[in-house]
Length: 454
Image (cartoon, rainbow, N blue to C red):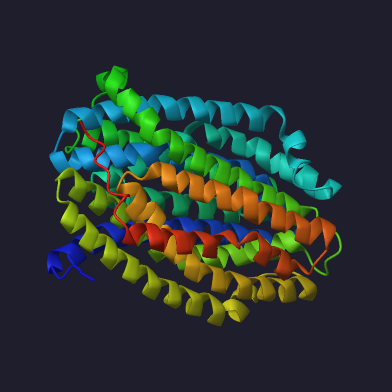
């Protein structure tokens, strides 16, 4: 087993991972403040459930944005290794136009049929009504959110990561302040509850978009991207984007839909003591907290792996992959401990009934164990394998384990066997240990090493 001993490798990993982890921390804090403020408001438990389910289409758009940029990131990282800036500019131009199209479709659906969408997630009339109000307002954020998400991901591929921290800080400050004003009716504003949370999020997302676009066109010196470059197109690069990007897009898109189906399964459980959706929202927040470092390192692994392969040094890429794999075990163990030991004080933040608190603690225990495997999957699959160009294997592994294992088992546990909610959650998460084992086996081989540049 050959590990990387060079200090420059670890320094470079931290230079990429730490800003991304900080960005993720700020995004997490934004979401956490949303749930805490809604949970403290009058009728907070219902609003928390409505916002969690009403936010599912936005979550799907986010993951599509991540997926759209996934294949492009593989290409950009390897062209970055070759310092081929012209190809990178062309990829940016094509991806901006594609992201704009997806964003407008998502916005149109959220603005035109919010109630019909919400009925897919819940039978509770109050939650459907509140959630449709939340979703309609969030539709305005969809217009720009896909573009800004994609641009931030592509900037990471050329090791421009600090700007995303500043963008998220602005978004966080705006969102928290406007939540305080609009949810509770401070500073003379009306108390809008869940609609106030949606308005605050829309304004924050628009600010993200404005800052990242201004940076791209007027401040970034690395790419030299200009307004006229939006018209750039390259037939061969477009074919490469389709070839390497389609598996990632399908992967992330079908994964997002699968997670949304799981949310729907939770939303239709009517036999539990406590609110499964509210409890699951709290448990998910803690998992996101633990995953800040995991996906910071995963993104660093993708960039470093892609750049090294772009430099045509496959032996070095193998050593780096082995090192990242071992790091994933340590990060996973630390994440398990973090979630498990802060579950009680975390649940205590929320103004929800005791039955829902008990349910949340049980679900957090399940999540703590699963997060160990999430670390392996995140760093090996999102990082090493995708960075190495092995996008088709990643697609078949993620889609297969989710749709042929987790979703059917979750439905069986909830709708047929009517098992306790923590067992339903465990059934839904069985894909993570499965993927972790497959990723370890794949990384230890050499079939994932693929040069995707021309």
